[in-house]
Structures are given as C-alpha cells and as structure tokens.
Image (cartoon, rainbow, N blue to C red):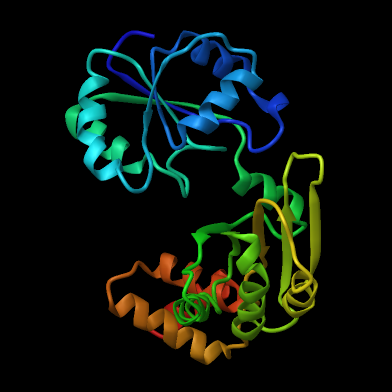
Length: 275
C-alpha cells in the first residue's frame, strides 16, 4: 500500500490458525505498529513466525487521546498498522479516537477483517441472530451495573456483553434480577481456544454455576425481551403518538409492531381508519 493509510487489523482471538494471509503479509512488511500492548504484539509476531521487527508504539485507553493526532499525522507519510490484543481494534478496544482524528485530517483508514469475539459468540450462542446489540463491558460498580441492566430490561434484541471472570457471577445474578431468572443466556468462554466452552441456560441457573469460579476470556449473550402484551387499542395509541411527534405512519407502525408483536399492516390499516 502507498502512504497515508491507517490499517485496522483484526487479529486472532485465541487460535493463531485464524490469522489471515493478508494479515501476515501486512505484518511482514509493516514499519510501524500502534499496539494496545506491545508485549502481546511481540508474542503475536513470534507466534506467526514473522521475522520483521517494526517500530511498536503503545496505543491504549490511557494515552489514545494524547496520541491520536500525532499518529494520524504520521500516517500522512507512512502506513500505520493498528492492533488490539485480540479481535478488531476500536470494538471495545483502542482505535476509535485515532480513526476520528484520521477522518478529520483526511487520512485514509482501511480494515483487514477477521476474528471477532462478538459475532463468534453470537453465532454459537443458539440465541436469535437476526437483530442484536453489542453492549461491551458493563460498569464495574454494582449500583451502576444494576442501573445499566435495568435500562436494558425491555430491549427486544439479543444482547452481547464482555465480562471478566471475577465479575461474571455477580453480573449474571444482576441479569437474573433485571431480566428475570429464566431469561435465556449463553456464556461463551475461551472462544477458539483449547478449552472453549459454551454454557446455555437461564440467568439464575448460570449465575449459580459461575459462583464455583470461571476462568478465561468471557462473552455473555442474552436473549432479548419478549414483546409485551399490549391491546390493539393501546398499540394504535402508541402509533398515533409517534405520528404526532413527526414519525412517518409506516415507520411508526413498524416500530410499535416490533415492540408489541402485533402486525404492522394491521396497525397501519387501523391508523388509517381512525383518521
């Protein structure tokens, strides 16, 4: 590649065999790498058999704000490869600030796609995959975590979270309280690694299991809330309120239908008849 390019490179989340040929080629020719942890990147280069020794610059949560503009400027004359410890940079990892700074300067940003713990866990969870939301790490403080989960109690989409092993049992217990003890959950541990494990069950059941102690990298996938039982009259009132606020009738019907389980066409016809 020519200069003026920032390359966001996805790296294996566990199994080095998942490294793409394109990733290896780029790393073999890289002159500068911005890495979440330079020691992890050195181990990655060694594990992939790459003899190239590019200049490594630390780019993490604590220095990204200060480093972003400088790195974006350097990419105007030299390709810059960006790596997180595993998976795709910027996704619950450093990189967002750098990409924003690059966009402001007109520096091209491209991607080497690859492994992602988010979609890997979603695919293997056994929960609906047609619509989902990624929530990243929940707050560490118990009160803030419970508030965040309470706000998601009626979320209809499948939810994906990252969590540390030490907080997993507490988080699952809070999920059982906020979402209901039987809300379906999949705990995905050590994805793509030798000890890969997927535990499926109700939130309370898995909270009890996690109390015994869990190790490894954790992704938690939670089913969305079931549509609330709403009468056709109440649903029509919701449609009319959305339309009054400026939402198109068709879009209002689709939104209320998704939240209630009622037919969008039926709501549309009822709204027309009520005019």
